[in-house]
Length: 496
Image (tube, rainbow, N blue to C red; front, top):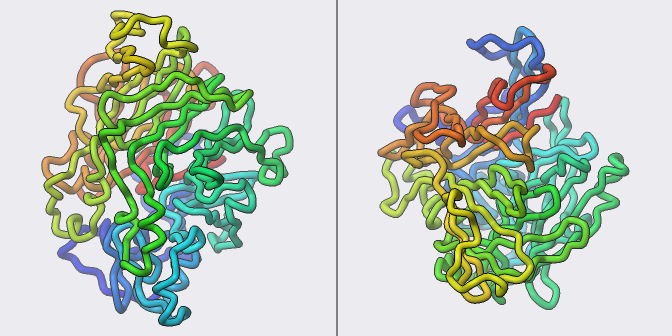
């Protein structure tokens, strides 16, 4: 990787990060529980500036995989760039080539002059794997908001190879997230397909043959997109309960007409996106066993952009859905490197909040009176019948709900009723004023109590944790909130 000098005048989180090879021991001031041994994997941007050009968004930085090995008395760290097509082209050209979220396409010496007049296709989408590390069949993978999934060597972090989601799952694009059914052990992925119309499709990898999950992936069901010109953006879009797959379709749409014109007009990925808040956010309930979708149309009263899904579970013929949301698309502007480096917040930036939606599971909404509440009076969320629709209003979780951008729970309570949620900010909520009350830390929200979250762990202004990993105490009889947290700079996966 060509070296670019650091600049002390800008935040360290917005500067190039060198690879760490071989692993080195790092300082760890807190005591490490004797039972806490394993590896934390993270994927995030490592390089923003090249010799002949820079990326425009923090989320466009070249992906780097980081490995944190936790022993009884030491912690070791190593890191390496993921050798994606995006990485190889950028390093060779010494400037960005493939378009990113806020970065327009650059000149590609491997293509001729007339290539800029060719339509932009699915295989041209950036394979920069920011944010998601997952394991399938004991192998480690990193994923992007596109069709490409890369395998990582767990010992030396080298990029082993890749496969295309269309060949494996039949999905043109894939949501960069794999969710495990805690009851059956099955793995689920979600993606978009184009047949007669755009479809949002759920695929299951069965637990029955763990060594061949990918080969035995099966279709669960599909949901047609509400829009003819493209599907919704799929990051953090679905969750599992005991009997249902909950799919959240936000009015944040990838306009394929704009995608096709990328090379001609120099579009960024951000330019592909349409935000149509008048269409609201729709929530679908798909039966796990049959793939059938309940006919009732559930819509949120106000459009929401999903930042994270904390948990979903069933209770008394209702589905409880806890999510981190934003009211517009300003998150993407918040990640502009120019804003982060200058510490100037975009005027439209709205920090995230955490809220709970309670969804009544009903077969026929017409059996209920018009404008009637479908929830009991002691529930703070709302579900009102409006014609053939159920209009949902969420209950804010925690006071001063500013910057609750990501959340997690004890994984032993996944798809079950939980009492504690742990939340952190994403980067913009930690650098722009006013900063979140949980900036540079991890907040604990007790859902049975009113008030602000208690800050469980906090560092100085130079640290920007994002989405902690919850590691349950394995001792018999441990309480739900009896755990250490492994704060992480990027989204990560903890493995034993």
